Length: 161
Image (cartoon, rainbow, N blue to C red; front, side):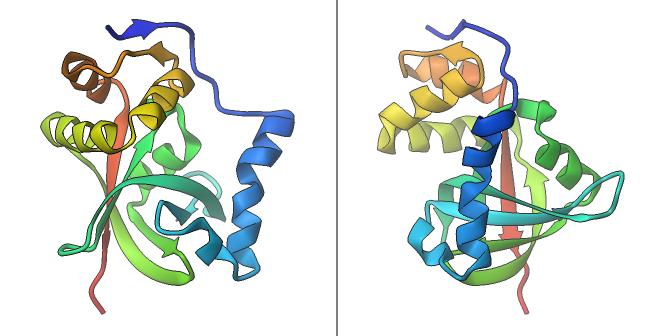
């Protein structure tokens, strides 16, 4: 059963520095160490227009369509989420390869399907994502359906050259 255990808040202080550490691996050309389970997102600040980077976990990759899916654990509160809503044309780097991409928030039905696949492949990780988002779950199908209506799943589609 999905239970609310607190109000999620993005990291600050030391936790923010720790969360941002993987960005430096990408900057010095060691993004390959992160494998294909993570991507570096470069987007524009909606107010400043400045280039901003963040590293996100890939919860699904569709090789046939070159689509990467990530979850916004803080829902609509994440700054990167707000920025890509304002400007969906972004750059992503997976391993050491950079791609231009377009971001799209998936529908609730798609989110349920994607989270279901992720939960089946990574049962401990889905519970950690839920805790980070302020929820406790046991991983049942009903939890996944309910959780998929709370967090946002974003698809990054790589632009063809």
